[in-house]
Length: 238
Length: 159
Image 1 (cartoon, each protein chain N blue to C red):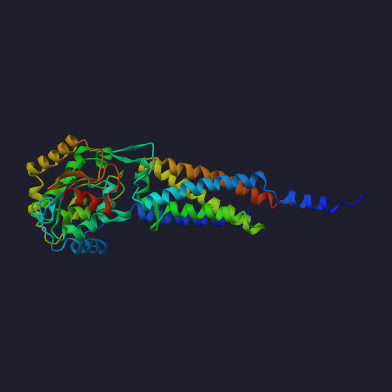
Image 2 (image 1 turned 180 degrees about the vertical axis):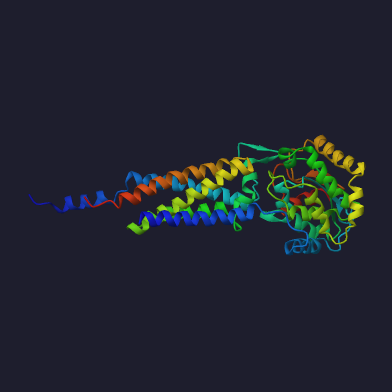
Protein backbone atom coordinates (compact mmCIF):
# COMPACT_ATOMS: atom_id res chain seq x y z
CA UNK A 1 0.00 0.00 0.00
CA UNK A 2 2.98 2.34 0.57
CA UNK A 3 3.69 2.39 -3.15
CA UNK A 4 0.07 3.28 -3.90
CA UNK A 5 0.11 6.14 -1.42
CA UNK A 6 3.32 7.55 -2.90
CA UNK A 7 2.04 7.31 -6.48
CA UNK A 8 -1.29 8.95 -5.54
CA UNK A 9 0.51 11.77 -3.69
CA UNK A 10 2.83 12.47 -6.63
CA UNK A 11 -0.13 12.49 -9.03
CA UNK A 12 -2.19 14.92 -6.91
CA UNK A 13 0.80 17.23 -6.35
CA UNK A 14 1.59 17.23 -10.07
CA UNK A 15 -2.00 18.17 -10.95
CA UNK A 16 -2.07 20.90 -8.27
CA UNK A 17 1.20 22.39 -9.52
CA UNK A 18 -0.03 22.26 -13.13
CA UNK A 19 -3.23 24.11 -12.20
CA UNK A 20 -1.31 26.63 -10.09
CA UNK A 21 1.33 27.26 -12.76
CA UNK A 22 -1.25 27.73 -15.50
CA UNK A 23 -2.86 30.49 -13.48
CA UNK A 24 0.33 32.22 -12.46
CA UNK A 25 2.50 32.55 -15.49
CA UNK A 26 0.10 33.41 -18.25
CA UNK A 27 1.48 35.09 -21.33
CA UNK A 28 0.36 38.62 -22.19
CA UNK A 29 -3.17 38.77 -23.55
CA UNK A 30 -3.24 38.87 -27.36
CA UNK A 31 -4.94 41.97 -28.73
CA UNK A 32 -7.72 40.35 -30.75
CA UNK A 33 -8.18 37.28 -28.58
CA UNK A 34 -11.43 36.28 -26.89
CA UNK A 35 -9.92 37.14 -23.51
CA UNK A 36 -9.01 40.63 -24.70
CA UNK A 37 -12.58 41.16 -25.88
CA UNK A 38 -13.98 39.84 -22.61
CA UNK A 39 -11.67 42.12 -20.64
CA UNK A 40 -12.72 45.20 -22.57
CA UNK A 41 -16.41 44.29 -22.41
CA UNK A 42 -16.14 44.15 -18.61
CA UNK A 43 -14.31 47.49 -18.52
CA UNK A 44 -16.80 49.17 -20.86
CA UNK A 45 -19.72 47.89 -18.78
CA UNK A 46 -18.19 49.23 -15.56
CA UNK A 47 -17.36 52.66 -16.98
CA UNK A 48 -20.26 53.21 -19.39
CA UNK A 49 -21.81 56.65 -19.01
CA UNK A 50 -19.35 57.87 -16.36
CA UNK A 51 -17.44 61.02 -17.38
CA UNK A 52 -13.65 60.88 -17.57
CA UNK A 53 -11.32 63.87 -17.64
CA UNK A 54 -7.61 63.09 -17.74
CA UNK A 55 -7.01 60.75 -14.80
CA UNK A 56 -10.29 61.71 -13.12
CA UNK A 57 -13.28 59.36 -13.12
CA UNK A 58 -16.67 60.82 -12.29
CA UNK A 59 -18.55 64.08 -12.23
CA UNK A 60 -15.96 66.91 -12.10
CA UNK A 61 -18.31 68.78 -9.73
CA UNK A 62 -18.76 65.83 -7.33
CA UNK A 63 -18.70 67.06 -3.70
CA UNK A 64 -16.18 64.42 -2.62
CA UNK A 65 -12.86 63.67 -4.32
CA UNK A 66 -10.85 60.53 -3.64
CA UNK A 67 -7.19 60.65 -4.58
CA UNK A 68 -6.10 57.11 -5.42
CA UNK A 69 -2.32 56.65 -5.19
CA UNK A 70 -1.33 53.56 -7.14
CA UNK A 71 1.18 51.72 -9.24
CA UNK A 72 -0.08 49.84 -12.29
CA UNK A 73 2.17 46.87 -11.45
CA UNK A 74 1.08 46.71 -7.80
CA UNK A 75 -0.79 43.42 -7.19
CA UNK A 76 -2.74 44.79 -4.20
CA UNK A 77 -3.93 47.70 -6.38
CA UNK A 78 -5.16 45.07 -8.83
CA UNK A 79 -7.18 43.32 -6.10
CA UNK A 80 -8.64 46.65 -4.97
CA UNK A 81 -9.43 47.92 -8.46
CA UNK A 82 -11.00 44.68 -9.65
CA UNK A 83 -12.91 44.05 -6.42
CA UNK A 84 -11.08 40.81 -5.59
CA UNK A 85 -10.95 39.68 -1.94
CA UNK A 86 -13.18 42.55 -0.82
CA UNK A 87 -11.52 45.35 -2.80
CA UNK A 88 -14.00 48.21 -2.78
CA UNK A 89 -13.40 50.01 -6.08
CA UNK A 90 -16.10 48.44 -8.31
CA UNK A 91 -18.79 49.17 -5.69
CA UNK A 92 -17.52 52.72 -5.34
CA UNK A 93 -17.83 53.14 -9.11
CA UNK A 94 -21.25 51.51 -9.31
CA UNK A 95 -22.70 53.55 -6.46
CA UNK A 96 -21.13 56.87 -5.45
CA UNK A 97 -19.22 57.65 -8.66
CA UNK A 98 -22.06 56.70 -10.99
CA UNK A 99 -24.42 58.81 -8.88
CA UNK A 100 -22.12 61.83 -9.26
CA UNK A 101 -21.41 62.07 -5.52
CA UNK A 102 -17.72 61.12 -5.69
CA UNK A 103 -14.96 61.43 -8.24
CA UNK A 104 -11.68 59.53 -8.17
CA UNK A 105 -8.38 61.04 -9.25
CA UNK A 106 -5.63 58.53 -10.05
CA UNK A 107 -2.16 59.51 -8.86
CA UNK A 108 1.10 57.70 -9.54
CA UNK A 109 3.26 56.36 -6.72
CA UNK A 110 6.07 53.95 -7.61
CA UNK A 111 6.02 50.94 -5.29
CA UNK A 112 5.99 47.44 -6.80
CA UNK A 113 7.53 48.64 -10.06
CA UNK A 114 10.41 50.41 -8.32
CA UNK A 115 11.03 47.41 -6.08
CA UNK A 116 11.30 45.06 -9.03
CA UNK A 117 12.22 47.07 -12.13
CA UNK A 118 13.04 50.70 -11.40
CA UNK A 119 11.81 54.22 -11.98
CA UNK A 120 12.28 54.22 -15.77
CA UNK A 121 9.84 51.31 -16.25
CA UNK A 122 7.41 53.06 -13.93
CA UNK A 123 7.62 56.31 -15.90
CA UNK A 124 7.17 54.41 -19.18
CA UNK A 125 3.98 52.62 -18.08
CA UNK A 126 2.42 55.50 -16.15
CA UNK A 127 3.01 57.98 -18.99
CA UNK A 128 1.50 55.47 -21.46
CA UNK A 129 -1.58 55.35 -19.25
CA UNK A 130 -1.73 59.13 -18.76
CA UNK A 131 -1.48 59.56 -22.55
CA UNK A 132 -4.83 57.77 -22.90
CA UNK A 133 -6.16 60.38 -20.45
CA UNK A 134 -5.53 62.97 -23.16
CA UNK A 135 -8.45 61.27 -24.94
CA UNK A 136 -10.37 60.81 -21.67
CA UNK A 137 -9.83 57.06 -21.74
CA UNK A 138 -7.36 56.74 -18.87
CA UNK A 139 -9.62 54.54 -16.77
CA UNK A 140 -10.25 52.17 -19.68
CA UNK A 141 -6.49 51.70 -19.98
CA UNK A 142 -5.83 51.39 -16.23
CA UNK A 143 -8.65 48.87 -15.80
CA UNK A 144 -7.27 46.79 -18.68
CA UNK A 145 -3.76 46.99 -17.23
CA UNK A 146 -4.95 45.60 -13.89
CA UNK A 147 -6.98 42.87 -15.62
CA UNK A 148 -3.96 41.78 -17.65
CA UNK A 149 -1.32 42.40 -14.98
CA UNK A 150 1.23 39.62 -14.48
CA UNK A 151 3.58 38.54 -11.71
CA UNK A 152 5.30 41.68 -10.48
CA UNK A 153 8.79 40.21 -10.67
CA UNK A 154 8.49 39.35 -14.38
CA UNK A 155 9.62 41.81 -17.06
CA UNK A 156 6.33 41.91 -18.92
CA UNK A 157 5.96 45.68 -19.17
CA UNK A 158 7.49 46.76 -22.46
CA UNK A 159 6.45 48.72 -25.57
CA UNK A 160 4.58 45.71 -27.02
CA UNK A 161 2.56 45.13 -23.84
CA UNK A 162 1.68 48.82 -23.46
CA UNK A 163 0.67 49.14 -27.13
CA UNK A 164 -1.32 45.91 -26.89
CA UNK A 165 -3.41 47.40 -24.09
CA UNK A 166 -4.00 50.58 -26.10
CA UNK A 167 -5.11 48.55 -29.11
CA UNK A 168 -7.80 46.89 -27.03
CA UNK A 169 -9.60 50.23 -26.53
CA UNK A 170 -11.79 50.69 -29.62
CA UNK A 171 -12.23 54.46 -29.31
CA UNK A 172 -8.59 55.30 -28.73
CA UNK A 173 -6.77 57.16 -31.51
CA UNK A 174 -3.52 55.18 -31.51
CA UNK A 175 -1.56 57.75 -33.52
CA UNK A 176 -2.46 60.54 -31.11
CA UNK A 177 -1.71 58.24 -28.16
CA UNK A 178 1.77 57.49 -29.49
CA UNK A 179 2.41 61.23 -29.99
CA UNK A 180 1.09 62.13 -26.54
CA UNK A 181 3.42 59.60 -24.88
CA UNK A 182 6.25 61.96 -25.78
CA UNK A 183 4.60 64.95 -24.10
CA UNK A 184 6.90 66.07 -21.27
CA UNK A 185 3.88 67.41 -19.38
CA UNK A 186 2.74 63.85 -18.70
CA UNK A 187 6.08 62.85 -17.20
CA UNK A 188 5.92 66.02 -15.10
CA UNK A 189 2.46 64.94 -13.94
CA UNK A 190 3.77 61.50 -12.87
CA UNK A 191 6.69 63.11 -11.04
CA UNK A 192 4.35 65.64 -9.43
CA UNK A 193 2.13 62.83 -8.16
CA UNK A 194 5.13 61.09 -6.64
CA UNK A 195 6.24 64.32 -5.00
CA UNK A 196 2.75 64.68 -3.48
CA UNK A 197 2.91 61.11 -2.16
CA UNK A 198 6.31 61.83 -0.66
CA UNK A 199 5.10 65.09 0.91
CA UNK A 200 2.16 63.23 2.44
CA UNK A 201 4.52 60.57 3.80
CA UNK A 202 2.63 57.73 2.14
CA UNK A 203 4.08 54.30 2.72
CA UNK A 204 2.47 52.17 0.04
CA UNK A 205 -0.17 51.50 -2.55
CA UNK A 206 -3.07 51.49 -2.83
CA UNK A 207 -3.59 54.54 -0.64
CA UNK A 208 -6.80 56.55 -0.82
CA UNK A 209 -7.43 60.03 0.52
CA UNK A 210 -10.98 61.39 0.68
CA UNK A 211 -11.44 65.14 0.35
CA UNK A 212 -14.74 66.94 0.93
CA UNK A 213 -16.39 70.01 2.45
CA UNK A 214 -15.45 68.90 5.98
CA UNK A 215 -11.77 68.38 5.18
CA UNK A 216 -9.77 65.34 4.20
CA UNK A 217 -9.06 61.94 5.66
CA UNK A 218 -6.89 58.95 4.91
CA UNK A 219 -9.20 56.13 3.80
CA UNK A 220 -6.66 53.40 4.48
CA UNK A 221 -3.27 53.42 6.13
CA UNK A 222 -1.37 50.27 5.23
CA UNK A 223 -4.67 48.37 5.17
CA UNK A 224 -6.61 47.06 2.22
CA UNK A 225 -9.37 49.53 1.22
CA UNK A 226 -12.73 47.77 1.33
CA UNK A 227 -16.01 49.36 0.32
CA UNK A 228 -17.08 49.86 3.94
CA UNK A 229 -13.85 51.72 4.83
CA UNK A 230 -14.36 53.95 1.79
CA UNK A 231 -17.97 54.65 2.77
CA UNK A 232 -16.89 55.60 6.31
CA UNK A 233 -14.27 57.99 4.96
CA UNK A 234 -16.77 59.61 2.57
CA UNK A 235 -19.27 60.18 5.37
CA UNK A 236 -16.56 61.88 7.44
CA UNK A 237 -15.69 64.48 4.82
CA UNK A 238 -18.90 65.14 2.81
CA UNK B 1 -3.06 -17.27 40.15
CA UNK B 2 -5.91 -16.18 37.93
CA UNK B 3 -6.23 -12.68 36.56
CA UNK B 4 -8.78 -10.56 38.36
CA UNK B 5 -11.40 -8.43 36.65
CA UNK B 6 -9.53 -5.36 37.88
CA UNK B 7 -6.30 -6.40 36.10
CA UNK B 8 -8.15 -6.96 32.81
CA UNK B 9 -9.76 -3.52 33.09
CA UNK B 10 -6.39 -1.86 33.70
CA UNK B 11 -4.94 -3.58 30.63
CA UNK B 12 -7.79 -2.29 28.43
CA UNK B 13 -7.35 1.24 29.75
CA UNK B 14 -3.61 1.14 29.00
CA UNK B 15 -4.09 0.26 25.30
CA UNK B 16 -6.57 3.14 24.79
CA UNK B 17 -4.23 5.86 26.09
CA UNK B 18 -2.91 7.96 23.17
CA UNK B 19 0.77 7.42 22.47
CA UNK B 20 3.45 10.05 21.97
CA UNK B 21 3.10 9.80 18.21
CA UNK B 22 -0.62 10.53 18.32
CA UNK B 23 -0.11 13.44 20.71
CA UNK B 24 2.58 14.88 18.44
CA UNK B 25 0.26 14.62 15.42
CA UNK B 26 -2.51 16.36 17.37
CA UNK B 27 -0.16 19.17 18.46
CA UNK B 28 1.19 19.91 14.97
CA UNK B 29 -2.21 19.50 13.28
CA UNK B 30 -3.75 21.96 15.76
CA UNK B 31 -0.92 24.46 15.19
CA UNK B 32 -1.38 24.05 11.42
CA UNK B 33 -5.14 24.39 11.76
CA UNK B 34 -4.67 27.62 13.74
CA UNK B 35 -2.29 29.07 11.13
CA UNK B 36 -4.58 28.08 8.24
CA UNK B 37 -7.63 29.39 10.09
CA UNK B 38 -5.97 32.73 10.79
CA UNK B 39 -4.70 33.23 7.24
CA UNK B 40 -8.08 32.18 5.81
CA UNK B 41 -9.81 34.72 8.06
CA UNK B 42 -7.34 37.43 6.99
CA UNK B 43 -7.78 36.48 3.33
CA UNK B 44 -11.51 37.14 3.49
CA UNK B 45 -11.07 40.12 5.81
CA UNK B 46 -8.89 42.05 3.36
CA UNK B 47 -5.66 41.41 5.38
CA UNK B 48 -6.74 44.17 7.78
CA UNK B 49 -5.08 42.68 10.87
CA UNK B 50 -2.49 40.40 9.28
CA UNK B 51 0.64 40.31 11.44
CA UNK B 52 3.93 40.02 9.59
CA UNK B 53 7.60 40.78 10.17
CA UNK B 54 8.80 41.66 6.67
CA UNK B 55 7.53 43.93 3.95
CA UNK B 56 8.11 46.75 1.55
CA UNK B 57 6.25 49.60 -0.13
CA UNK B 58 3.67 49.66 2.61
CA UNK B 59 2.44 46.11 2.21
CA UNK B 60 3.69 43.28 4.37
CA UNK B 61 5.49 40.40 2.70
CA UNK B 62 2.73 38.07 3.99
CA UNK B 63 0.12 40.21 2.25
CA UNK B 64 2.19 40.22 -0.95
CA UNK B 65 2.41 36.43 -0.89
CA UNK B 66 -1.20 35.84 0.08
CA UNK B 67 -2.57 38.16 -2.56
CA UNK B 68 -0.35 36.78 -5.33
CA UNK B 69 -1.30 34.52 -8.21
CA UNK B 70 0.09 31.60 -6.21
CA UNK B 71 -2.22 32.12 -3.24
CA UNK B 72 -5.10 30.37 -4.99
CA UNK B 73 -5.56 27.01 -6.64
CA UNK B 74 -8.22 27.32 -9.33
CA UNK B 75 -9.77 30.18 -7.38
CA UNK B 76 -9.66 28.49 -3.96
CA UNK B 77 -7.32 30.17 -1.42
CA UNK B 78 -4.52 27.74 -0.51
CA UNK B 79 -5.13 28.58 3.16
CA UNK B 80 -8.58 26.98 2.80
CA UNK B 81 -6.94 23.86 1.35
CA UNK B 82 -4.60 23.83 4.37
CA UNK B 83 -7.56 24.14 6.69
CA UNK B 84 -9.19 21.10 5.11
CA UNK B 85 -5.91 19.12 5.18
CA UNK B 86 -5.20 19.73 8.88
CA UNK B 87 -8.83 18.96 9.73
CA UNK B 88 -8.68 15.62 7.87
CA UNK B 89 -5.43 14.74 9.69
CA UNK B 90 -7.04 15.42 13.06
CA UNK B 91 -10.21 13.47 12.25
CA UNK B 92 -8.17 10.53 10.95
CA UNK B 93 -6.84 9.96 14.48
CA UNK B 94 -10.31 8.98 15.63
CA UNK B 95 -10.31 5.95 13.35
CA UNK B 96 -8.21 2.80 13.26
CA UNK B 97 -7.14 0.65 10.35
CA UNK B 98 -4.53 0.65 7.61
CA UNK B 99 -6.71 2.52 5.14
CA UNK B 100 -7.22 5.45 7.53
CA UNK B 101 -3.50 5.61 8.33
CA UNK B 102 -2.71 5.48 4.61
CA UNK B 103 -5.20 8.29 3.91
CA UNK B 104 -3.64 10.48 6.63
CA UNK B 105 -0.15 9.85 5.23
CA UNK B 106 -1.41 10.62 1.72
CA UNK B 107 -2.94 13.93 2.84
CA UNK B 108 0.26 14.91 4.68
CA UNK B 109 2.40 13.93 1.68
CA UNK B 110 0.27 16.04 -0.66
CA UNK B 111 0.37 18.92 1.83
CA UNK B 112 4.15 18.63 2.11
CA UNK B 113 4.66 18.49 -1.66
CA UNK B 114 2.44 21.45 -2.41
CA UNK B 115 3.90 23.45 0.51
CA UNK B 116 7.39 22.80 -0.90
CA UNK B 117 6.24 24.09 -4.30
CA UNK B 118 4.68 27.22 -2.78
CA UNK B 119 7.83 27.88 -0.75
CA UNK B 120 9.82 27.66 -3.99
CA UNK B 121 7.43 30.25 -5.53
CA UNK B 122 7.88 32.52 -2.51
CA UNK B 123 11.66 32.38 -2.72
CA UNK B 124 12.25 32.45 -6.47
CA UNK B 125 9.19 33.99 -8.13
CA UNK B 126 7.74 36.42 -5.60
CA UNK B 127 11.02 36.92 -3.70
CA UNK B 128 8.97 37.43 -0.53
CA UNK B 129 8.62 35.27 2.55
CA UNK B 130 5.41 34.85 4.50
CA UNK B 131 6.14 33.59 8.02
CA UNK B 132 2.69 32.02 8.33
CA UNK B 133 3.21 30.06 5.12
CA UNK B 134 6.62 28.88 6.30
CA UNK B 135 5.11 27.90 9.67
CA UNK B 136 2.44 25.88 7.92
CA UNK B 137 5.02 24.24 5.65
CA UNK B 138 7.10 23.22 8.69
CA UNK B 139 4.01 21.76 10.40
CA UNK B 140 3.08 19.82 7.28
CA UNK B 141 6.64 18.49 6.91
CA UNK B 142 6.65 17.23 10.51
CA UNK B 143 3.17 15.77 10.04
CA UNK B 144 4.32 13.96 6.92
CA UNK B 145 7.09 12.27 8.94
CA UNK B 146 4.78 11.48 11.89
CA UNK B 147 1.92 10.11 9.78
CA UNK B 148 4.50 8.15 7.75
CA UNK B 149 5.81 6.50 10.92
CA UNK B 150 2.24 5.85 12.06
CA UNK B 151 1.39 4.28 8.72
CA UNK B 152 4.43 2.01 8.67
CA UNK B 153 4.24 1.10 12.36
CA UNK B 154 0.55 0.15 12.31
CA UNK B 155 -2.08 0.52 15.00
CA UNK B 156 -0.99 -0.19 18.59
CA UNK B 157 -1.74 -3.82 19.52
CA UNK B 158 -3.50 -4.69 22.78
CA UNK B 159 -0.96 -5.65 25.45
